[in-house]
Image (cartoon, chains in turn green, purple):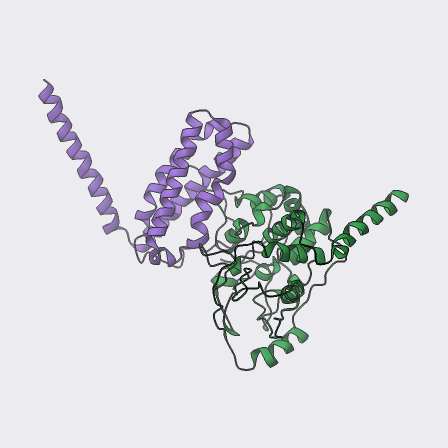
Length: 293
Length: 165
């Protein structure tokens, strides 16, 4: 009992440290932590054109909303986020709002990233500021009339599920796996089927999507024995680190991208974290949903 | 006597050249898209089976035994560009049209697989277990994934590995 109080006090002390540090420059440890979390998101790869400058944006995304391009999130003051405060960047990551109040199109999954713990988001911001600045103007988006002013707010209120941040970062067990899967690694963005409104249908969380991004059929990764993921925990953890599947195939497409990442990716997660993800996936309700022929 | 050997060599060399040229050109002219897709999928399955075998051997503590598998992958890799003639897309194919839009990159990716598999073979032949283990650690991502990621639509379900032939 005393030990648990003591460890709680220690933990609170550790959490309080960055707050008391105020506007001091982030420590090397915080930047390293930020890089780790950045990798666990898949390297924020949407913001990098394959083989292009990291985080400089410009990748095209088309959907029923119109056409958008990922933005420059390098520390360039003029074209990137170098002129934004930490709070402004965190608001964009969590709430999808630019400093000028403009809404982000939720191709950037802010409703999901809102599930990240404060200290992890702060660490990511500290890391983003260390990536080389690239001067590259954002490309203009073309969205439906009144999309940002009317349709998007209505959709966010009525349909979009929103993750909530934990008070502390889970550090082990399936709680750690759940945190990584649901928030940081944002697995549901591709692996969860969508409703007619394009919101993720979380009643079928991770049950696969026959019409996923880039016209891919996204596998069902619930533990359903006939249509889902039947690999062992060890095999899942290995796959996330190496791209190797038990049948000799190797990951490609968007999954290949997030495993490889940019400056870091899923592959850079510790074995313990990859196993935590695997264990959490095994606790999901199995959902029968055959994807592909 | 020596002249006879030289003459035999020239005749034999000529024959080999004819057969090789015939095979190479004949393959392109006779195979339709469906056959081409089936042939390359068979080849890729075999690459996958060899890759699974390599990983199993390394896990079993026998990294020096992967030379034959690595050699097979290296040889298969040489055939990859020839199995992707332009327009060889069917509904069974998972190839992306980007292959033909970025053909030099695709060729380079196949060459990369050939070279890396060749390196792995050489390390295994040299019985350098540590080097084999290191190469195998990143081979999937660097040699296979580097081509799968830009050029292949991921399969939706896991397929059982084909037997190695």
